[in-house]
Length: 200
Image 1 (cartoon, one colour):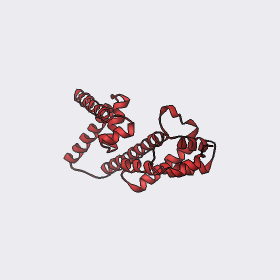
Image 2 (cartoon, helix red, strand yellow):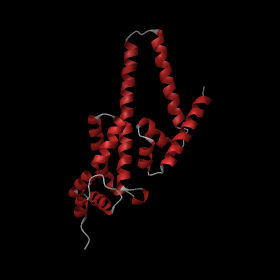
Image 3 (spheres, one colour):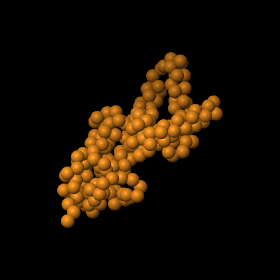
Image 4 (cartoon, helix red, strand yellow):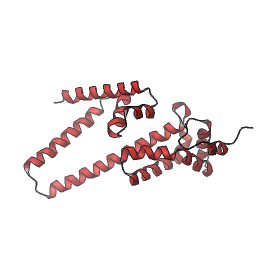
């Protein structure tokens, strides 16, 4: 008789490969409302999820909140997991990266609103205003250029430059050879340069 998921999960160290039958079974049981299975899944994967969140948001308190959001979504959407599209760990880390990037963008939007309020309510020197306008213009051009990349190029660029990952880490996160990850990043940067240059 094969050992049950709880026994298997308990024997696996945190951060173990997440594509194993144990994690898949724990996720399936979580989808059926099994809180013990959900707790075991959390114990086995939370370290990596929190690590990714910290790398992206660069703030421990914010990373804790992102981690909580990830597992709340995992609990709610466990039944949608498709093993053919990746391992349980990949699924969780994809959710983590998306939520962490959303939080960073939200924080940036908040800072922009505060900056706008400040500029509207305080007199500033002309050259300072000009610099702010130029920076905003450049940021918009970069965001527009990002939309011209392929999905795989944009994903690699966001991980490397917004997430702060090394090429090796990008390759591991996307389950790619390092050379392929470097090629996607390089091609994406070339396309960004050409797109931004064409708009000047």
